[in-house]
Image (tube, rainbow, N blue to C red; front, side, top):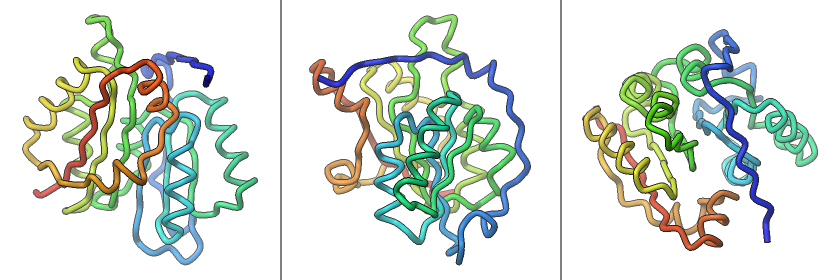
Length: 203
């Protein structure tokens, strides 16, 4: 059985700042395609996606420095040159490092649910975050979200519906074949219901 470790890091304590990234400096022969994973954890999906889409520049941001360092080492070991891992808070990274209208795909898998009501403000997917996200994504770009916490899922769906820029997409192929997450393994082991959906930015 996989060892389960849930390490909580208050995102408000992570205040790294960023200059806007020059994508062409991060990837040789930059294709113009940029994907972002926020909270990549152990990097299972991150490395899979980078290998499967070598023409895409894949960026990842995570609040836990040790996790970022571990993934950076694995990218070197696997000779993956089209993916870069950064330490920082997701919203700050999105706001400062990501160019407007540049993202093709955004992945948010099993974000910290912060179950206590007084901690709900720490949740990543909220009204302000979603509004910012629409500015950073291209039209027709896709947003992929998953969790095994029903109350969090309902809150995220409510926020997405209020934003009105996203519509649900039929994308079962991705969730059946490409979706890889060590957190999802825990969901299966614990017999927890899994929630996931793909959204397309239409506005």
